[in-house]
Image 1 (tube, one colour):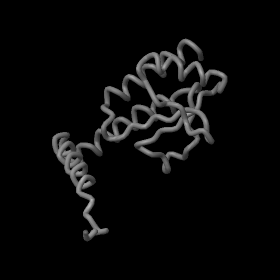
Image 2 (cartoon, rainbow, N blue to C red; image 1 turned 30 degrees about the vertical axis):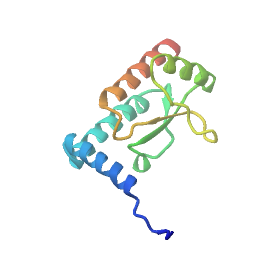
Image 3 (cartoon, helix red, strand yellow; image 1 turned 60 degrees about the vertical axis):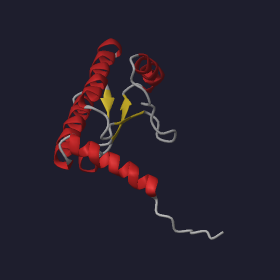
Image 4 (tube, one colour; image 1 turned 90 degrees about the vertical axis):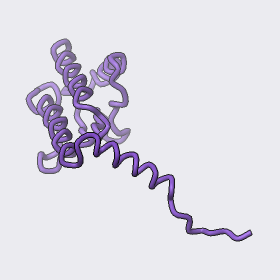
Length: 129
């Protein structure tokens, strides 16, 4: 039996093809870029215009995909995570070393999902700020 150690990564190619097809259905790379910019601006806008939330990353270095943020009072972190989870907003806990929160708003996250997060954040600030 002969083994070939250089099999092409066909499953990875298949998955990439599905992603490319989905991107095309969304309007292409330029359309996704515009949507991702809108999502990032919406979320960073809530953070930057608030004294309740903060983001310590310089604007020139900010990611459109992973948005870290902290609450002004870290004692509210646990409550924020519990209430956000109950509201259907999952996986917001920040990195175990950095702490705080992190919203991952990758391509598959719709604008409505980011809007749901920002609405929750504004409501949480109103109730606990």
